[in-house]
Length: 452
Image 1: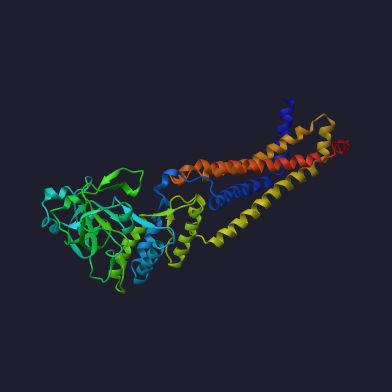
Image 2: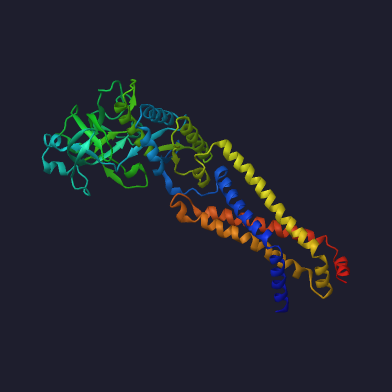
């Protein structure tokens, strides 16, 4: 018990004597650990990517979702209020869709559409209509959309761009599907193409024109039926291969990714197509072949966002650091990396100097301890405890910041915390190693003489 009491008394004496410096070191170590983990997450692969976040697999690589953060949606929708803003969204979409070696496709299977009730009744009875409506809806809503006040019927719908339509192998029994040609409009009066599920056969013919609104939007689109799908056509829900297959027989397939082959300064025309492309970006997937491409894509999305003054897209599968710093330039992140390295070096230097100064200023005390039969290890252990206490707060702070709830389902938090633990162990071992190197060069006989 005497040795244990001595060790703890010496630990408290030493810790209290340098209390302010120790607190500063605690703060510095906490900041260091956080910054090193973030920088490592950004530049390296910590293994934090969960396998289930991949959407689809093929021989050319893996498809990952790209989307727009909820907080950024307001920015996009704000830009649609001006002609310049709408044109920026169109140009931004075109640039994203033409990234070399990284095809983009857009698909959504959960977004309902609205048709004017009076127009629907001319096409089918109410009983037939129920076949095409979602089970969880009340069937109709009243309101004004794009200046048209009416009662609107809710219909099941899926949205595909031409790339997704081809990727999932959708085929028509009549007419045609989505192609780059029919999703490119040559004038403002041209209708948007739509494709119907097989259950619409005999009710709505190819060539029929309809007015359709996307549920939740302010736009009523002039559409034209260009084809009817083969019976039994099915796709993965949400466009993800790990989801259940859903039948499109009772769906209206609405196009994403409308391209304009004409110029206009009328924002009433431009904004509605910009809105469709904004929604397409929100529900897109991109193919990547290597893990190193995540950072390249995040940096490219950031560059394109700054070029068009729009928020950058979020890439599912990107690391925690890449997600947090997605709005920063590559140059500013390199500056943060340099600052982090300098901070780590300065923090370790401060720890080493604290140990060195304490040993040097307490030589006479240690001489007395040694003269009274105290072993060198009993002097070292309080120092090792002090180093541990200085570093432990960084563990607690890191566990709090990198807790699983903070990042929901997107990251493997165990991999992130393992990186934290490794860094803390390395920092502790460096401190202890330096301590042993100092004590190894101490002349204990000289200390005993000073104790005399």
